[in-house]
Image 1 (cartoon, helix red, strand yellow):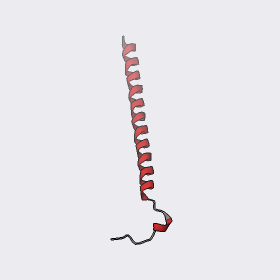
Image 2: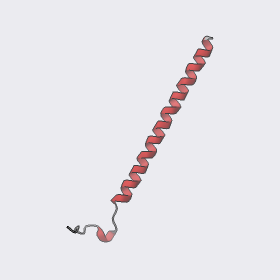
Image 3: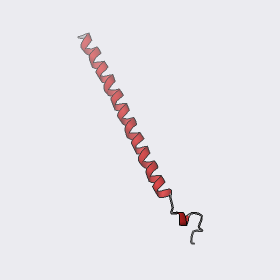
Image 4: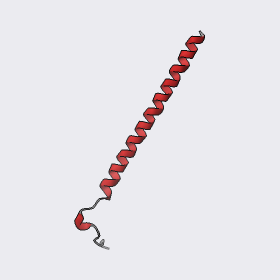
Length: 55
């Protein structure tokens, strides 16, 4: 009976670690996507770089 509880707690800890790793992977992937999006939005063609913006 005690061994079953130890096994269950070990399995629970493994599952919690896997959950944390998955959360970290999702956060890193979102970060990558945001960086790509920001880079794509922040670039201008060479002809517009340094040109004054119309008002």
